[in-house]
Image (cartoon, rainbow, N blue to C red; front, side):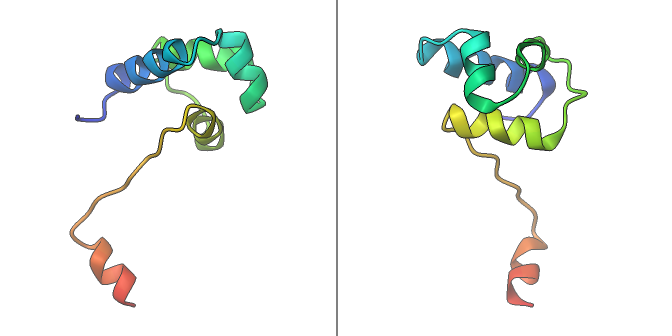
Length: 76
């Protein structure tokens, strides 16, 4: 799946609902504000990477970077 604001918002919301937790519960578990969760699910991405990673950790999501140059970096 291509990573877009809309897809990321949909993925976060879907995982939260599958976990049967509210935005407030997710926010409390991740140590972020409910507004941050709401904005994330609405596709408003003026969000710090640290906040996104905290939410991902609670929802058991991971973010993977891909590039042909990453193999070269690993070899250094």
